[in-house]
Image 1 (cartoon, rainbow, N blue to C red):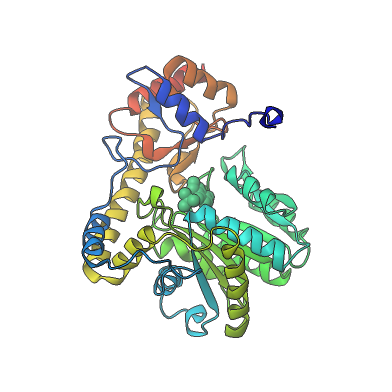
Image 2: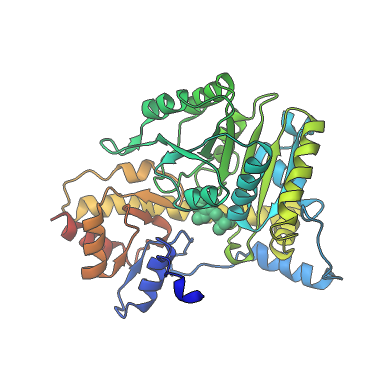
Length: 397
Ligand code: PMP
């Protein structure tokens, strides 16, 4: 029977990683997959995580199942980190949170919930977006539409195009917004633009779904939540998919959360019951370890301070590499203006390089970046930046 099964194409981003591993060039550079790397090219385990794990190992007394919605205590910690303890969503108790296997798990649970409980709506994705978004929401059976996002001519946000497209959305449609550090462009709305997006969402009665995978990687924990808090006006409903893969470095522990903010506490309870139904038939209940680490760090003053320092270090390194790359590009005689890279935020940068240039970088220099021209800035270091500039200069001709 399996003779009939054709081979699926490799994942557009993870497939590149496999090609990188097989490349024998000792000077190869991997700027493809979205994983933080330190100056030595290592994806470290944070010290606060190691300490939390030590404590957890000592105190762990059972491996029994978690509840369907995850660890008791994790849900409130996640909401507080996003909204702050005094936010109206917290005091009105109109938010509910389920623990999920990574941000991807949160997106899929959200997709299944929308398909089951609020069918018939279109889901709007930015053009471009993280390539797994269409995979996830198509698998959940949702009809997809796109809104303009990237202004190629100015390497900035096509805010006019974005608003124009979203004005065409029907009442009740779902709009996926990247909470901060837009993947793949690195371009986020300004606080004023977030306000206008909030107005539009409210006026048109759209359902915002915030993908919040990089809190703390842009400008700071609360700075990066500006858009989310602008959208979360009194009474506004929303969904938020969190990931702790990046900001806790817990990639392979698969720790994330889906938060639903309803109009009232009672409505939030009904939504929670539906989310649990989706999870039960999907993976039954989540794994404990990563969420236990996050919960432990967030709840302990000493570990939390340690985490915020380690997070700031990762953020500052990335923003430092943006600056260094722009300076080195200018210094090596490339005339084209790349200063926009410094204005972008988060792990990624849309470099403006086209598919042909990307292919040439890989075949001639063993420099791996995604076909869209997306660079993982966290893969750049003092040690490889000159070679990267040399490559960019070469492919620009
Ligand atoms: N959303 C976006 C925009 C992402 O970039 C990622 C990770 N690449 C995710 C969600 C998923 O994160 P996780 O690894 O926690 O599933």
